[in-house]
Image (tube, rainbow, N blue to C red):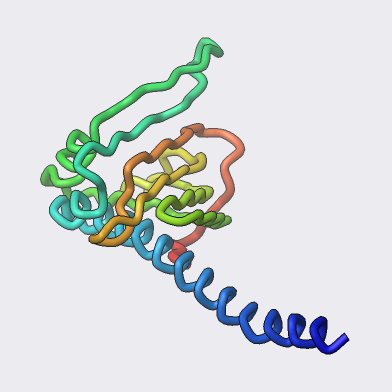
Length: 161
């Protein structure tokens, strides 16, 4: 009986610490994603590039107008170049419904988003991030999104967590 009480006491003491550590890790993953959206808004290509691994890739899964599914792949440097191109248009990706899962050095984060080019709504979908935690912290190595123009929620302002 005493042994069971000691085990329960040990669990009661360590469980909150584990939960705090998990919450802190999830917050650090969210921070990388928020930094990416901030870099898009400010068109800061150097900051944006620093958030990705050297060989990161972006993919988009869509249903074409003719109804056929399509998966396209783009190197991260093409995205970084587009973000850094001079323009007065602010790329504002407004996010909601965060989900973060972490297992060791791998994290998966998903968000629902609505994308605005300046004040003009463009499209919505989900972003699915895969991140690796190396010696230099969390880096995005894969970003896959969906894009659609119908069935999108109204998101009145940017919503970092």
